[in-house]
Length: 249
Ligand code: PGA
Image (cartoon, rainbow, N blue to C red; front, side, top):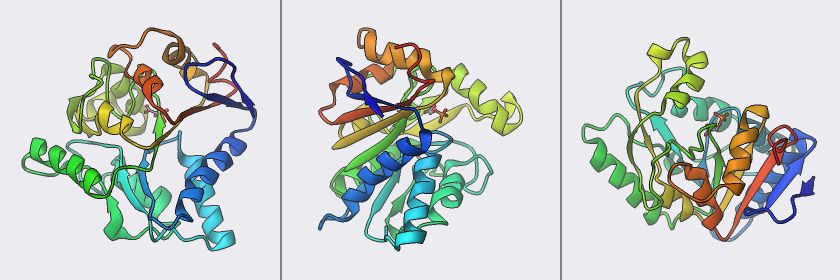
């Protein structure tokens, strides 16, 4: 692992993705041994999966318990049932909760089945506050600079809300949905300000497809045209890259 000098976000480049996952897992697990309970913000998908596998390994091999932790998922598609193969609820249950002992009563998902989605968005925001705020948010970056589903145009002061998905986001999701038409048009996401309120942000980008947006995130002027540039305002943010994602730096 090597730190990047003079980056606008403290940035670390890993030759080995497994080492990246171990480093991030170590940071999360440090929170679990504190007397207070940890509140974790969870991203989904290929970016955090190795870190979640690392959680499962520590659970298996060291008996480490996650039962005291509280979790809030970052975002969710609107219009899929909770058991839909592509729903983030199902993904999180199958990829993470099945393998470690999180207490289901302490896990939270955006309520995209609510009759009043705006009220549900406000309630999600209130629930995060009531839990004491997020100790650590795990994040990816989309090719278009989205964080969560805060697509280009998302303001720095945005809160949990319903958003229209950007064409690139839907195109990237089309493969797992089987076709573009099946990808939902809308989602609920924590806002940019919700994310920036987390006490620690750990942002991961992997692969060549992220190399350009990583460069822009670090080096272009901050603006809502590229929401990931707002990450530079955070006091305790780290960007973890593999070699490919760092290849334009
Ligand atoms: P991914 O990227 O989908 O490649 O994991 C993260 C994101 O789009 O937020």
